[in-house]
Image (cartoon, rainbow, N blue to C red):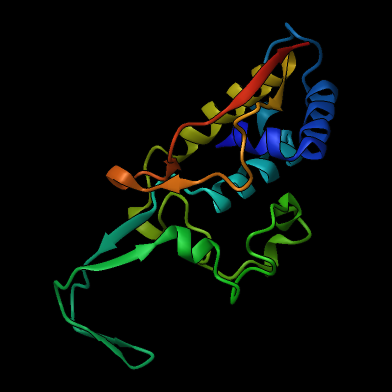
Amino acid sequence: MATHSLAAYPDCQNRLSSEIHDVIGQRDDAISYDKILSMEYLDMFLQETLRMYPPAGRFNRQPNQDVEIKGLKLLKGEDVTFSTHALHRNPLFWSEPDRFDPERFASHSKDAIVPYSFIPFGAGPRNCVGMKLALAEVKMAIVRLLQHSRIERSPNFSVPPEITTKGGILRPKDGLFVKVVRR
């Protein structure tokens, strides 16, 4: 979905390309983990993409004891399903939740994010163990892609994309149509 976001929001792509050029350099300059971690806009862009299109559309938990939360009684062992997609688009937590806005994740804005309202990899002690590796890999792929190319809309491109959660993974229903143009 990151390539969809790059094509859908060319201003974001331009800002990201500028940051990549400033931090990493030209096409064949080495990408290091430290440089990836220092790229604030890359992180903001990726976090907003994950908010809009969390890879896991839902996750389940079971209470280990009976509990009542705001009048809702949950019994020990009962299956509780959380929709990350619905949570990440909830207007109680996100102003204009359907608008793509990486600034939500800027260092000056992060304190306004309600705890547990953004959970693309789950939360707490049972969050995804591969989260840091996955984020690093995606960031490196985006950097390398934008060092060599621009992502543009193809004739079949749609905003917003029609999505499905078939198989428990959120993805474009009929594929993702973008054009990769060599720089």
